[in-house]
Image (tube, helix red, strand yellow):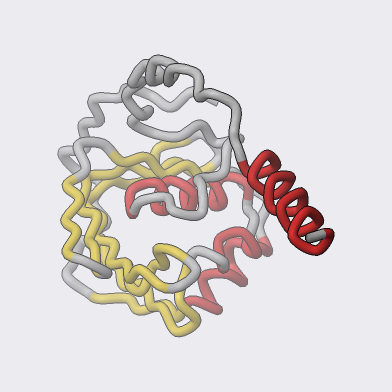
Length: 178
């Protein structure tokens, strides 16, 4: 009988410990705030940032001349190819791009607008008109086509191709601000 009483007391104390207080009504959901079109330069995109946020992070890294930050946005064997005004294709391996980026001091500013972002599962393309400024001065414009893959570490740039033009460059954003 004593065993039964000890067992009953233990069972009762376990049941009391498992009871939860009455649940309070759920709070109202937070207000939905639309995401910013372009994330601020000082704020890194979250780990699950989409393709366009990764492209903006690349431009932020270029403006800061931060080759290490830029390197983290690419797959190791990425390529960059520019089509010049005379139709010549100029290929630059990623490591060469990073050396040029990290060795200079002059500010680079690249801006895109009206981006078209195509995503299918783990692949994406960001296609957009752009302009480029060196030390605050306009140098060229064109179109960027940036291919990305979604890896275990998030979206990574695999390939960039662009045109480089100096005529007919009209940016609806106006001159860059510094």
